[in-house]
Image (cartoon, rainbow, N blue to C red; front, side, top):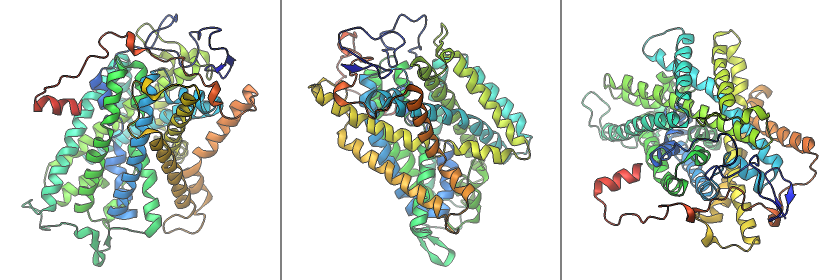
Length: 548
């Protein structure tokens, strides 16, 4: 007996999974009139893994963490979240290569943890992206204020129209946009690292600070310290780090539309370590060296206030003219890249939920070009919420909407790790060998335990700093606390709702009843899938393969 996608128990050989079963093999196709397009190539998958996460969280939000926690806390916090993501993406890679199914990690939650938990995570993830889109569009409009003040409504309309146009090209349009914007962001980060090293060594003629070194890590006379605000300052870094890394898991969601997940997914997951190290840790280390953490300019570094971006401030403090505007343009591009990811993450998740019977049926319809039409329409409609900011009370409403997404990334990442742990238990209970897996997590199941542990620690740290904010009184105000932690009760409410709706009184799918075959791809039947890698490659090609 095994659990089907809906949690029903059927004999292994009694019937084949129906086309509407959650988690069908999108690679081999079904009897449905249309299915998601497999238009994502390896280079697209590479850029989705990195491009979907580099945005305002890194370029702008890191400034508030620098000011509240100091450069050392900022670095440690991002390293911890980076290790968590490394373990999470490795676990996701193992599952997504074996099961390149529509819905990815939400499906894994249904199949290996509990259908109600999968339902809760799926809808929380979809809602999170739905609400993030208007925020990112607004943020993109606000970045224009760096040059000249215009009515933000004009830019909201321009950017939303641009996203609508991209949707007409389906998944290939999404992949190409991410590929181009991802390259721009990578070049910008690498350029900043080189620039920052020169500044720190006193190599900029117009910078009268001379050699800086680690001056701002131990300059108590001017209020610059490696650790600011003690333990609370350290805990305050986690939520900003999670926001900065958000979207890294999209590479697993994209597996259903990858031309060859067996090759592209392992490459994407294996290189996450180098990307986290190079593009986050190193850039933040350099930024923390050349930007004084006591600077009052950092107090407003949130949202899309690029005038308070620590990366832009680093260039301005060095006295280099023209370059701050260039980097502000990069931030605008980065924000639009995240907005593009929003449209992908929400629409594919909603379509998968509906296809599995966990959402309105009309959302599951896919047109002949492989586009989930109604989820796209709903996502674009949510983009109109960006105009709420034009109202007097718009910011209050918008902040509460954003609060719904506050901790959703932690819940999703924790679910991926737990799904992998449970999957390994079910795989072992079925008497199957790890050698049968086409790709194994490089950190193994213990990496998933570590990732899950770090998720719990991060949630506890966030709860602590929300309950006892920096410079605030105990409890810090009910409104502020619930804005920071409202995602938790919503996840519980969704879980309970599905339990009541399905009248399911059980908890956790039993390991010996797990469905280990629906949606599983037989890679031995795919021509060219096991072609050996070239043994001799030029240095240029090795660099290219490392990036793409």
